[in-house]
Image (tube, rainbow, N blue to C red; front, side, top):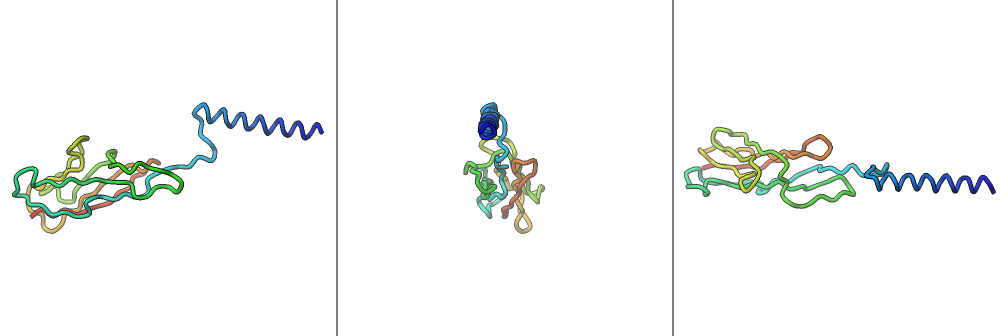
Length: 138
């Protein structure tokens, strides 16, 4: 009977220690490592005129989480913690300034075909996730 009482006391003590650790901001040993595993860029493609007066020569792009670690939930809002880049820096530039212009591409000249617009966002584990869209400037 003493062994059973001792085992129950040990189990209760371990449970209390576990709950205390969680209550003090500790991490559960069974906590999920949530991260973004894929993103979408919207629109997937666009065509605008570089000769149009502003804002007609611009196109706004958004990046959204499209997949996360199973069991995790991520806000479906526009991801604003990443960076934008374009494959044709001569004819197109894209804003990385936080605010209304973040993700807005401006056509300064005609592109030879579609330029690639790339969004890169932190995955949440020290790595990054990227996806692309295309922009043609006529």
